[in-house]
View 1 (cartoon, rainbow, N blue to C red):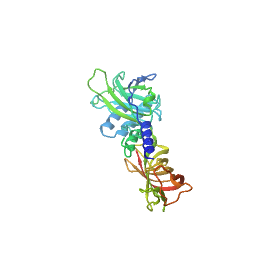
View 2 (view 1 turned 135 degrees about the vertical axis):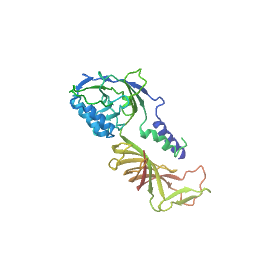
View 3 (view 1 turned 90 degrees about the vertical axis):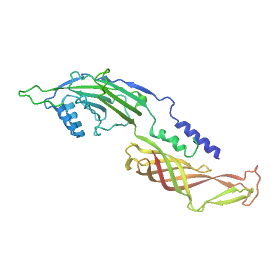
View 4 (view 1 turned 180 degrees about the vertical axis):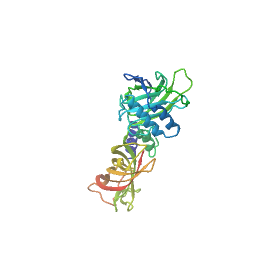
Length: 353
């Protein structure tokens, strides 16, 4: 039985083993039609955005940049991701993101499509020229990253002065480029963004790493339940006698389980609403005892703690005809046949990641 359990865990570990070659690629976006745009900034929205950012009000600055883009005719898709670089000065060029109502400085992407990642460069320099380099590095899902460690627990495996006369409204230049994201980087990858005015410049205007991690439906955990009261096992004792071995009342039964979440989970921002899941697994014991059930709970940071309810199937021994308790048998004799026992299970689950 132990050999079968070990082989089962080894098979799971092999299935979860990540690829040996980590795919990496430099992504080169293409300018969208009409870019770069030249916009006569009558209300100096670019200057307003600079001042808000200078004063530390990042979200107001970002909202002002959004307004500038709208007035300049750049339509933003709420479902797309826009890496935005605002070249206020060479010493103050913030980089952020527009995606729905997500905070400007957020670096989270939740599973990209082929064509929903863009780059926007806003500047007062004519032509809006910039050098952009984006390194995409494929990575594993949080589930796969932590699964082998989980199995290893059980198997050793500037500002100018006002002029005296009216001056023309400044022009703001906006460059917009669109990426074609290869399939390998759409689910789980890091995007390292580097922006310079020119390839030959030593000064980097802005840099950021964006974490593209799809919302996850899978997790794993340890589920501990109370066993049925007055359970017994029929075994062969050390002297070859068939005996009844009672189980301790209210003995704890621990199961290693894999969970499927009904609603995908952002592993870095978990909520109670997306914690509900179905579970299936095996008891950590000599005999094989599978379990299925449902559960839910709340996040404690690295782990989640919750309740579960399920039903397990225990494969136990039952005496064959002709044998009884107290009989002495030799090693060559197998007096048992398989008995299947179903048991309701209720308890606590610690869930990762």
